Length: 307
Image (cartoon, rainbow, N blue to C red; front, side):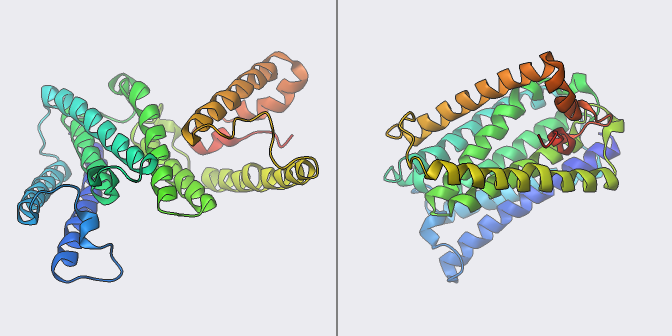
């Protein structure tokens, strides 16, 4: 592996290893030296496996993770395309199953304990992410080479959306306030996108400098956050004077079905508004602000005319 790639991958692998070690340490602490600040021991258990056996398996996994992260960091991991393909497939199945498990626990809180134990489910996501990163290491995926990352065009988007839904569902299932759950999910996904962008840029010369980031962060805060909030307040006050519950919306549907319908409706409107902005000159003069950046990265995709 080249030095730059190994450094990035090693950082991710060490981070995931540290996360998993916290899970092992937390469970052991609650088994022998319970702390009020941590969830009870039972919450760490996702199966009926005896704890002695589970702890042994966890320590072996930690040893393997540490060894792999060290080898990647030293740049001594050999390229193994067949191993990379196998790990890619395994990670996809493993991660999908873990996300479904979390969603099942949120949708059916009275399900079997294996589904509702969210701590083990979360750390299975950590392990799946570790396997996925190792697949990239074995394949020697080099940032900046689009032909080496074609698989990401089909995997990363559904992967990211699934993670966002799973995180939001878990937070709401544990009675986290709606606004907090929403913004935690948005911020986590934004950070994830920035990390991916750092790994797999379309072009190496599109990495932003500090000035770009500061300007676009200020633009997002004012135009994408503050202005819509003010407009929303006005619209809500107007609607509140007429109705409290729009009759046209299927409020009695399951929340998952309502979410899917909302996505379809909003995307349909966005699609035709976007088409109109490219077709009509008057609208294009407003919309071309969005197409003005010469250096493209995720934060400046939010550049839109305030109108």
